[in-house]
Image (tube, rainbow, N blue to C red; front, side, top):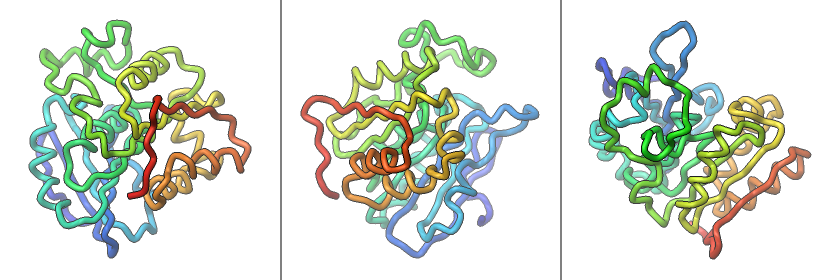
Amino acid sequence: MHPPILDDSALRITSTPGDTDVAVVSFSGIEQALGGVPREEFVNTLAGSSHSEFFVVDKERSWYNATAPVIVSTLAPRLRDFRKVVTIGNSMGGFGAVYFASRLPNCRTAIAFVPQFSIDPAIVPGETRWKVYRSRLSAWPVRHALLDANSEVHFHIFFGGNDRRDQAHRALYKNHATRRTSIFSLPLAAHGVAKYLRQQHLLRPVLDAAIQTQTGARVIGELLARHGVPHSAWFPRGALFGTL
């Protein structure tokens, strides 16, 4: 990994070069282990990829309410020459993957594992997790992940099937979904959907399907079915899954 593009008290952005016209932008989750700064995520999963990769760490754990403008201004000029940009993330990082997919140039696909729809108490009054970090916020300029969503982006969103708190966020995604949204539910997973897919040796294939194929939702469903992974898929009425 190259030296950081940006590294200050609130934000770290790093990158690795590639030799294709595709860039993957990974947003990190909270990473509470040992109380340290969140780490870059999906580094090992993406290892060996020939695509350019960018890794975004919100050190403030603010769900990007404190860092969104700087992230866009830093990444946008570096992504303008790519044919296709893909965002990925888990939990808070999944929130970022959805939100920034509509704000980064050439973004065609967002892949989000158990993303929060919002942490604004006015939108999710029943959310009780991550109190320490949420209590630091007094304003929520990033009100929810699908705020002013780009209808041309393909959103592939994954939830576990047995976590009531995540199901509330899933319902909100359904209510605000664009016509290029697919929501997969995996009943044997809880909040750790990405970990569950890794254990099934399917995390990298799922990412590759979403990144590389023109009809990612269909290919992902076929991939899960072929490997015997229990799942259901939801698409909005009038869903559009055209080629890119």
